[in-house]
Amino acid sequence: MTLLLSGLAAVAVAVAPVQAQTPAAELTGTWEGPLTVGGQSIRIVFRIEAGGVAVMDSPDQGGFDIPAEAPTIENGLVRLTVPSIGGRFEGARSGDGRTLTGSLHQGGVTLPLILTRTSETAARLVRPQTPVPPFTYRSEEVAFDNAEASGVRLAGTLTLPQGSGPFPAAILITGSGPQDRDETVFGHRPFAVWADALTRRGVAVLRYDDRGTAASTGDFASATSADFATDADAAFAFLAARSDIDAARIGLIGHSEGGAIAPLVAQEGVPVAWIVMIAGPAVSGGEILSEQQRLLATAMGAGPEAVAAGNVTQRAIMALVAAHADDGEAVQREVTTYLVGQGMPQAAAAQSAAQVSSPWFRWFIAHDPAPALAGFHGPMLALYGGKDLQVPAEQNAPVLERLKPDAEVVVLPELNHLMQPATTGLPNEYAGIETTLDPQAISTVVDWVAAR
Image (tube, rainbow, N blue to C red; front, side, top):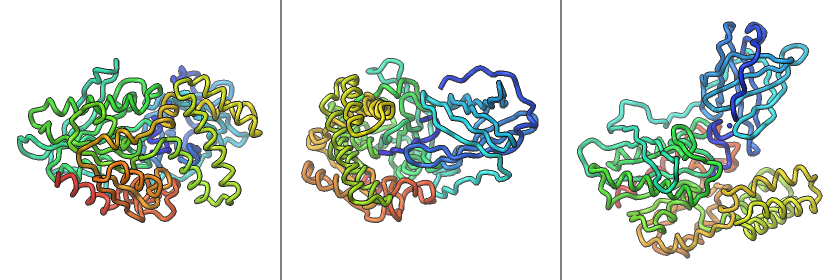
């Protein structure tokens, strides 16, 4: 489960109308500041030319040259609007004109952001594994509807080996949060890397934008993992109907939350040939998030007493959510009351409760993946990173081995949640690691799939 925002499209709000324009010379230059999201710091950069042309960069996420509207000023407030992400920055200028103190607004979320004028240009991240043409295979832009969800049309990329087929195929299913078809995070494009490696071995690969994300339509915010499973059902049906795909040899590869979704698809009766779980949960979401909290706090240097106390609170919240999983209002009420009782201010308690009362959180926390895992009778590979602090191998691998004894479970000791070689496994390492996918992780999965 990727707890980081994957692309600014995950943070997003209605664009405000353009107001009186400021003389461009007042704001000409490069403005940069840190945006704190999920405990991580993401650099946001605006570059404004003398004529008023402006672009936004999110260098830690690999986003550059995102068009922005010409900056405006109204009542001393600077506004920079970025239509493609449905967001805007609003901030007040300091007396010396060197800082803009305000907030980024996007998707109903408002995050504080202070931009400082700088002479430097944001460095582009080095991602040597990102596939670049020319390719030895074909690539086709596709789109398909989810017949079970009105308004959901999924856009994606299908890569096909040379020849007429029919080819075996893999469907890639993303982790948590609104993800594009490449599961882009901090400039890494792991699904593009997986697709490239698999297609070069003769396997067609379909990867698609999550509903309501990038080029796909639908409402992401109200969806649960069960809803996303129906999107994967639609992807399977789309592939199975093609003459160049062997419908009897279509498998699923899910990362993080996607690893929990893949068995759900099979449980619904879809004839899945095989499943690969990459950092996939084998215990309930409540158990995952509780252990995640403990490991992250420990890795960040919290003392044993603080870690234990935080874990007691986390587990209490998870229990309250699971007990009222079908009632968002009850979750909001019970969690708020509990946190206020623990000494948290009312407003902060209500804000924390609002997050876990969303449909996705309630479903995820309460869901037990055991029946779907035990009920899948096809081949399964489960790959875990030994330094994964988000879906820990030591918590999930043994459970999966008990639930499905014939599954092949592989733990690569030095890898993190993204299957990168890591030092601590903390999410704050993800952006600084040039490797998108460790070569051993790639060979483990690709060799296994090719043998199927």
